[in-house]
Length: 465
Ligand SMILES: Cc1cc2nc3c(=O)[nH]c(=O)nc-3n(C[C@H](O)[C@H](O)[C@H](O)COP(=O)(O)OP(=O)(O)OC[C@H]3O[C@@H](n4cnc5c(N)ncnc54)[C@H](O)[C@@H]3O)c2cc1C
Image 1 (cartoon, rainbow, N blue to C red):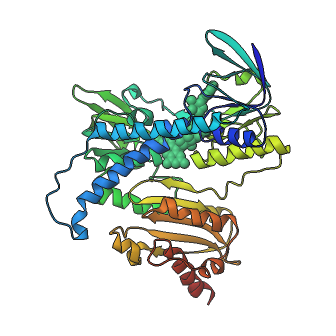
Image 2: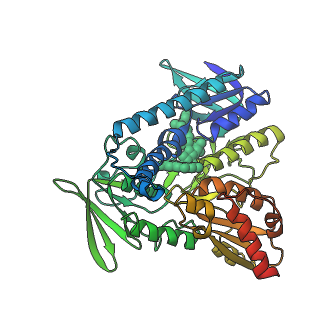
Image 3: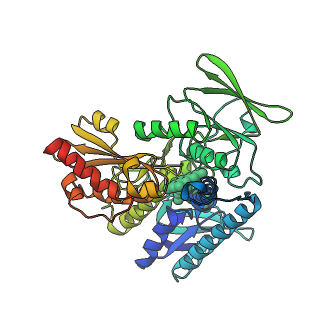
């Protein structure tokens, strides 16, 4: 059987769904394929949301541990009820997925297809339903199939689990060895160390969080080691994983010696790769390299009329990037390629550790590589009224500013609520605001956002007086 649609979208995650909603709102007919039958993608079921639900529980545990700082005394006989945490997670996930599906289905020109899609021609996608094969012909197609965990070729790697499995684990493990100190590995350590799991992180590169400002990453490294009792090995290469009678042993080269760590669980979190298996891309001339589908500045693949967005094209693998790319694909379909994405602006380096990390725009290293003369300075949360009140005065805000113009090029934060505070920075950096613009605005007192203004005034006085 053959059907038709203006646009077919493959993948119901943060890339595909906003693209579908935008096109539907403009009157297009849209066929959205999702192989799991549920909307939300990795973000909702195996990524952003479940990990942040666990982080919220970890934060509550931390708050209880530190409650005497707030003048509260007593015996608090709490314990984490892990099945209860999992139940809470399922409730939130299902509620969000169902709400998204009913919103999508409220558009009469939407056809949601609970099936795996594959290309048969550049403008035709096939799927199976009720034991029969069907074809959808579309003027345009958006590929938004996301990514899966990359599994490195290490001996015994089958003993390790990925973040997908960790986010459904049925108990709190006694110990965990984490291979990889990117955002996923660091968040896993932040969550489970707070729950009582002994966490060891092993990273091949010389430092944790290689995509984050190095001073920010270094600050977190100190906190993880000293305050959260996480063992961290950087510049360490895992050579094999061995199953022992009681646990798993991770063998790695570190500082010229062979080291071993025993752990109940081994998590492999060394990156993600595009999910393209079974899509039939080779048949229709859509090219892909190891980092993702090849797209031009308008997010059009090597096949005219076929666009791609989100993790499947590599780059910044964040839900908000997938969404802005999905919307750009939709707008380019309607406008005939007018919208380019500027990757200078999106909040990146986002890590929901304790304290949180968030950044936007250029790091010092990137400004140096681009040979842009810059000045930089920091605002420490130790002097911040609101951070002191909340007993979380760890960290700082750092601004990277173009010396000649005073333009804010980059904002890097480690501290309380950085994931929320970075949104102001995104507006400043994307609108080309200067130190003077920021210094001239009024921020509420006492609030964590004040630091931005104080820092701007401090830098004006220090560098431009
Ligand atoms: C542990 C973890 C934590 C994360 N935390 C954050 C965070 O805090 N903030 C953040 O911004 N990002 C976070 N991310 C990243 C974020 O989840 C991804 O960047 C985002 O989900 C990418 O969206 P997408 O639409 O490109 O792909 P996905 O969300 O992966 O969606 C793709 C969808 O396509 C479907 N699909 C695939 N192939 C087919 C096919 N052939 N036919 C039909 N359907 C198909 C899949 O089933 C899937 O539902 C996290 C990721 C992980 C793994």
